[in-house]
Length: 354
Image (tube, rainbow, N blue to C red; front, side, top):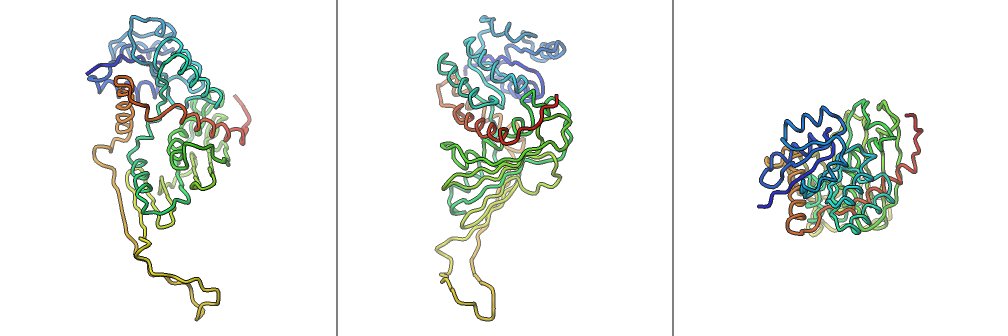
């Protein structure tokens, strides 16, 4: 089995706690061969933990061809994702860029063009595409038992007062660009990755200490497609459901750990006749539908959600780099996501305070 040599730019929460912590546990496929971080203490820690060359200037790492890196992970600040990802490809390396891929659709298109021009693979870390609960929701919808899907409600909510760089517009931060790429990627798969949906959005700052939004309400629509109702808020203690799906035959609701759905089978339903005259009594409409139930609990192997999603994402990336398999998450798909989020920001020009 070929062992891929990986360079990592950034040793913060993402670069270290997500990427290198995962990769070091799959030594048969990946070797952490070089690390870069602007902070000296993080470089020293990486040298101790991974025993690899470290660089405070990522450009020095890009220029050392004798490192023989198979790909480089860009886990820098969000506002640096697009420019550094472009530099990585132009230096002759394949790249895995953390989300968000870019701030604007124009930047995203430029990265796609750079990938094509240089012949280098552009992957974006949208691991929530592989979330077990999302795959189960998709499976239930695809089975047809819920009928035609009219609406999907998704809530990635909590309650917190955040005070780090992820609350600053100058860092391309805020709930939409930070947490948003996860549910946004999922719901675009449900409304369709082949269209640009109509977007309505309301964003505001409620608890964050910076000037970037921590309250987002988004409605996506398109003729003939389900309505998407998405919340990404830091001011809601009560979140009984992550997902709710409204169909013509039934509905689904649940969390990342448990899902329930209930539906009727049309061939079993008694025939009804529309009555224009007042009902006798007076009385209410009565029906005698027989409902069927389904449920799902996250499998034991997937209960560590981050490891489950990362494992499937990196398995696909390994196949892409070693066998030429197609990317499961393409940059063109992520470009659609960036266009939607850019429109959300256009509708909500928050004052820049820092």
